Image: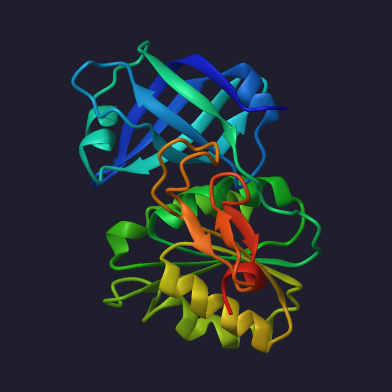
Length: 255
């Protein structure tokens, strides 16, 4: 299905952690077409709101109800405006956009950090009933509210925190090699801070594992016209994250 520009209705917009919200929008045609790894481009219909849309990863869909779940953090004026939108309000929405994850695997390992965990929720649900291991990291225990989100859809959950307040003290990449040795994984899916993904891709390559990465870049049009989100590929050609991504094979973007 081609991306659509639609007016959607807010079903819920609730605070789920410090500065983090779950937004549910009613968008039946988008919900029916959305694939894990894709995103939508939202604009608040308010004269004082920022002009540009905000790209937000799709965290889940309910095709029966015709809804899409979006999990976002307040990071600027656009998301601050969005957090105040009430139930029943209409939003201007473009989507679903981008290339999603390739789901052909038997033993997936999902590695995420921070808000990069949002698209991995939808991915985990799409991969069920395959055995799924999730390795997630955050600065503190409070940032890992994701544990309750992933627990129903994964077989094994590994946590790391920078300060050691829960799980293993350190970063996801610190425990990743040992986790790979213990599991019989065939594909790694990762989304989060770029330095983390670069290290995940490097470790995956060392162990001969396929790796898909979901990049996060600033976007303007979301349709490949403005080139604001382009990034360098390993072959020297620039990639449009909004249309050729946001999901890439790691070898395409990380040397």
